[in-house]
Image (cartoon, rainbow, N blue to C red; front, side, top):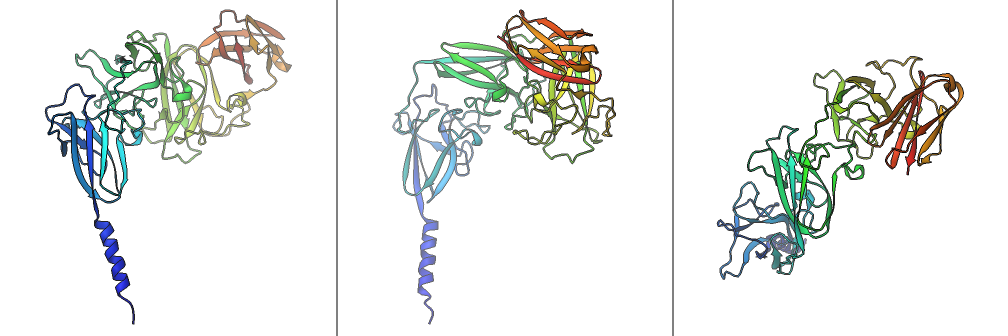
Length: 462
């Protein structure tokens, strides 16, 4: 005879566990809030606390500690946040960006995990104190950012400051322009000595697709997504900036002596990745994902136009997909248009007028097609020239080798931002001495080009 009692007991226990409830009490200290909104204090967010206005906390004894008890299933987990006011657009929620209790992947909300028994959570509005106290940093400063938007059309979603692990994602920290003069502002109170990377975003784009592109400019840190950097701030400070430029006086310098460079990439040799086609690299075109190329008419020719200073020169490459690790970049190794001294990237020599650069993904054809290249293509000649010394103070010697001695050679020297410092020709010379006394300290690229060959080498000015 089968024992039907044991399965019944298991089922009963399972039902009992599933139906078990716990009481979660939130006690929030409001000491850090200057003024409590008349509509009240609320908890919201995640999968378990609904929207602003649904769960109001109360302070019956007027001691500034607002509380609410919520009944949830045993094992309950959820993100959540506190709000000073009933704001359906979440504009009155606490700002925890950059703090250890904030989850940047979930709107910088808090997280409560696996509650197995009745629990009291003590918190302070806007800080990560978990003992019910509010640690107010008295040795703190106000940092005000003033952003001039003269050079852009402001997105309807607004202007934001973001990034650096302290300013959240686009959408978290909106900048405002109350007087409509195009200068957007944001003030943040931080500890004295605060440092951080940051960037501006034109629109509410959590994926950072609408952030400013300052790749190759002196205020961009290529090791930190080309974000700006705020060094240690010791007193109340106003940071003036212009969207997309490095002007720090609140103006927006429009470079009049500039050119438009249009890149047209034929993709007939590849299956285009769903992530898109991008141009990147060279210290001037950012990282994969920064500069998407578009194909508006669907003919397989992807384009990208950028405005640069006259004389601009730079390495660059194309990518089939958005791959931060560069794994989807075109492979030009061993081809004449790939510079082995610069990750086998392409090189754009000094350009003095509006130009269109035609290319084919993964090969060196430069006429807009993807047909086999002709014998007239320029090749990389590893023996074209030498630099002595490679670390210099006042002068540098360029030594030519082989047939290049009797060829006409164009010598271009540019810094790591693509700014041209020297552009001259040489013919029938074994050696050329160049003066570097006026060069600022830094890393430079020297590109030598003949009719059929080219080579790029690095040197350092101390």
